[in-house]
Image (cartoon, rainbow, N blue to C red; front, side, top):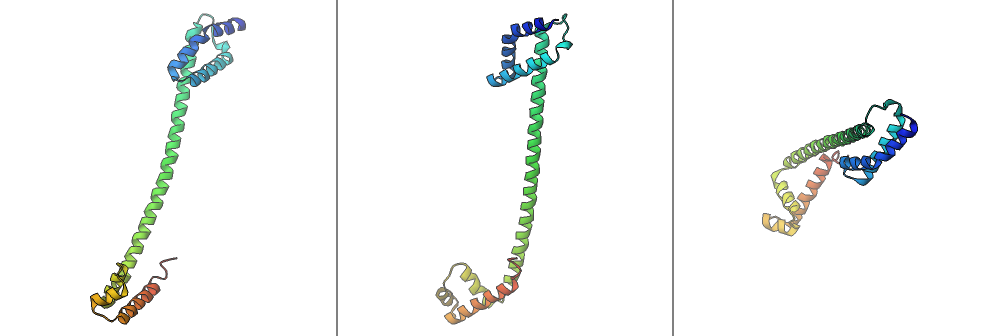
Length: 168
């Protein structure tokens, strides 16, 4: 087929190509892009078209193949994005697990230190942590306020010594 006849044939079926592209994409812009890609590929591969073939059928096949290839490429790209998202999520989960392990270890160490404190010192400390004032602790335990203050001071000092590596 002559180049002029081929070009005129394509121009004649261009409205049909637009309708077919719109059926495939369901979007005007995407349909226009698809028609443009199809026309470019048809012009690049004009020598592969033989005069005995149906030009409209050949163009529809070409357009469908371009559409399918673009769709597959998009799906593949989305899978790559999903995979990279999954990999990033996995790293976050691993970091979260490491943080959770470290937190659990720290809590066990804190629990061990607090439970190693003698009971007569631990009770005022627990009450203080629970929000009681010195005066309230002294009244509830029947202790002089100076004793409560002294016990809390020594507990804080002991905790500070035993947990000095805790903050680093």
